[in-house]
Length: 221
Length: 277
Image 1: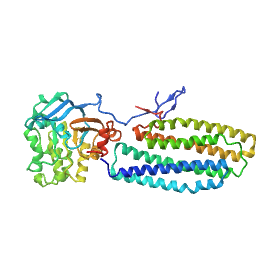
Image 2: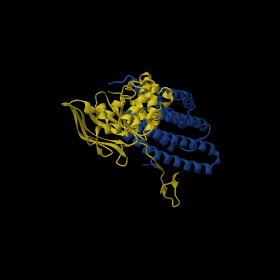
Image 3: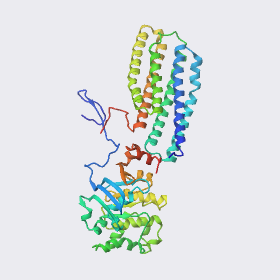
Image 4: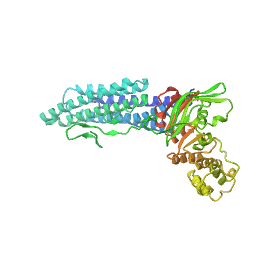
């Protein structure tokens, strides 16, 4: 029996995925702005932040309405709770992209510190994690969500590696301190994006299987 | 080693904070059990209405029975105090133990005193409020001050303040919600161990329903309750354990919080999400 509000649930999912695509694009463009020293692309990221923020509010209102009016249970309830959390993580991903774009605009006024090798790799990993966490939601794929969680260590290692490298550059040449520091911030932003993708993957697993896989160190007896 | 806050202990070993898991489980052997129902099959003549039900009703808790119309919930409920004995050509097989006593070996009047029942439509006797509550006490030959017991029962049913100045008014003059609470008071007067409630709020307005649900919470420690309800939100609000029945069979039984968030059986999921029923 099809319920009259099935359409509302599907629409909500589509809006969330659209927000996800905006956030993903923002991350990609912000890093491209840095790599290509392209101020226009950086500006685009800043201008499109509002669209992501408006979607966060819209999605929260939709969730609230469905919770109040339909008294959802089981998978429907888990879906709405997950959407609400994922919504927040996508908005924060958008914020991180804005931070990267702003760093890019500051960095491009200085000579390049070093060839960009690790930052593109970090970006590719982080973007892939965001994309796959949302694909896991679409496909109901727990294994894909799990794989996102497993990739976080790689992102963290790249951040640490980049930090050590840039620190060395800064110690050797004080003229690069400003630019190097901005690159450290970008690495931190990308690492945070990876963390948000992990959060999304955890919420997807909760929605699909009803298992709360956050904080595995806690002994849930 | 466990600490309240987690981290590393003095020798650097990982310390894990133990968090109680509210995720839910069915009543286990460790939980005190009021009713043990084993292999229950019920027949209306040749027609079987309940098929091989095994269920433990935990003591001092509220257990809800949910399921679509005709699934056997009320039949099952009425079997617990042998109300179905009054139906011609009905019979049942299996075992029902009340505090480990076979209910077929207990005097049926005594059983129904211990296992009281509240019905869907309030059914006060055509007597005064006072006499409705006192009736069971008189019939059971109670010793002691009747008025005190009547007041105690009406207080337990959260009705005393509304009727204390009209105890000798006809019970039929009360509102629907008051009548239902009077029926609960009447059942409570003989100090039952169990209260069976068959859709007790389906004829009541939302305010009366809320009062009955609140009353159930107040009573449950001293009186195990089993409630049949069509209202899933009520089952979710008011019960600690929920059993889902379908076509006479018990499909799933669990802590209410778990059944309504992560049901194990797809039929339970389909029913509670409104995809059928």
